Amino acid sequence: MFDLLIKNGKLITGEKVEVAVKDGVILAVETEIESSAKEVLDLEGKHYLSAGWVDDHVHCYEKMTLYYDYPDEIGVTKGVTTVIDAGTTGAENIGEFYELTKAVKTNVYALVNISKWGIVEQDELADLTKIQADLVRERLAEFPQFIVGIKARMSKTVVGENGITPLELAKDIQRENQNLPLMIHIGSAPPELHEVLDLLDEGDVLTHCFNGKPNGILDKETDQIKDFARAAYEKGIVFDIGHGTDSFNFHVAETALKEGIKATSISTDIYHRNRENGPVYDLATTMEKLHVVGYSWEEILDKVTAVPARYFHLEKKGHLKAGYDADLTIFDVEDGEKTLTDSNGFTRVAKEVIKPVKTIIGGTIYDN
Image (cartoon, rainbow, N blue to C red; front, side, top):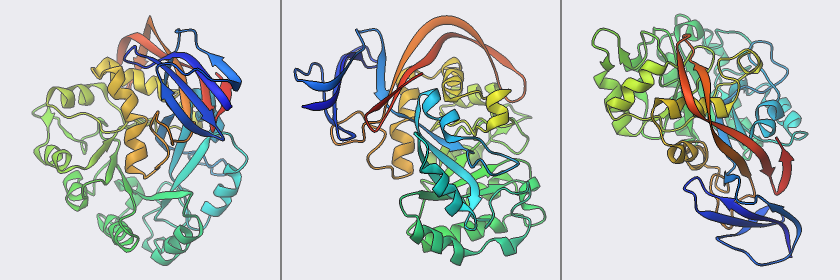
């Protein structure tokens, strides 16, 4: 007997799907499953079903003062089964963060900031003595199931006078730890974007990929994507949305798409202020923005499930397949106009909206 049987769901392609779950794991995914279960959830052909949504760039360590939120406020209540905190904490406080995550419903992982206290101040990489590889190594050994990568924010306000040096140190740490996933934030110069991209390798994650800043991927004079940014994309550097308060621009995303450059993964860079006051609000809203830009729902769902799971080595997440964790998102796609606003105040009108209905984490159903 199964613990949970989901009947009469549908994939985003319109195909019928049913899912059987036992002990927090997906046991079967078929067009029809005839079996008994302790709990049956009948979607009556009305709702879509996908692997649980993953937001690979959030800030949810509640004890911080600059950027913070609560995992369940941006996770389970928003149709998101898994969040990855992108460097809010460093080696000195990530242990306390881990202890707090044990009490929440949402799956939480973390990227450890190379600055040992994380983002306690805006310029956490202006003091190079805060970058201590030995401390990072210790925490990786202590929390191997929680820490899934490292994070360095490479913009003028963060690095101060240190230029590209913090990224060089981050790459050293990465190489010393079996090429652990590395996420790089980009913003104002220096360092110049080309300097950052020159140091990145295939599989490294460039977040805020479609920001509208002069140091972004768009050449303001030609209104085209910079050649070196295209080369980085073609090399296999992951272009991650990381919407945030100040890091997503419709025109940049639209221009990139016209030139054949699509975001690899879709994330929010959400924290309590841009969740409460916008322009982010939640992962679904960010997904709607990429749909307005021209992405299909099918590829959008891939970019919030399988893709982030692959790049951050979440081996049992991101797929609606037998043997994977029973993390699922049930949602609707509805016709209806909705005004969407980017980080620079520009708007687009969505004709379709995506709405989470239920979030299932480890086989437990939560109603949205």
